[in-house]
Length: 152
Image (spheres, rainbow, N blue to C red):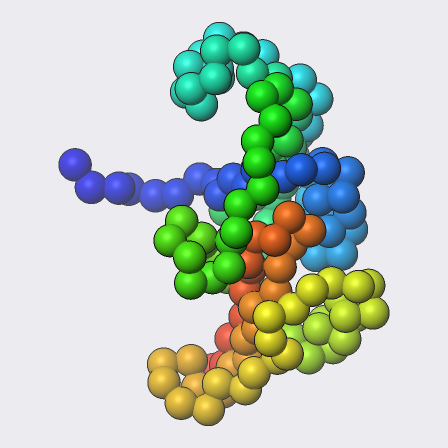
């Protein structure tokens, strides 16, 4: 049976307030719903922690049907991972933006951590676009991607 769609991407975070300040306040995601302490049996079975308590927030990615879910494990608390992009298990989501260079300047002033400055894509299928990699507050790589002009 093939996959027929995608609903959300989930990141585990260390501090929900810090992550919401990044995703909601800096990047403009909107909260759909928040559950401060998820303890339902079915949830605990799905994630494999029978005594877990998770602070969960589901966010809408503006201009998209895809959602971002953030989990902060209150119990059991996990350990930080090395999410450098070349490490197995590391992943990223590419988020579309309208004008990457000014957004980069704004995020830089806010103290965000970047892997690269905006890079102009001068060849390949996205020629004419712009992209960069950066880290969220927990070190998860994300890509900001400005599509090329339609007539490029």
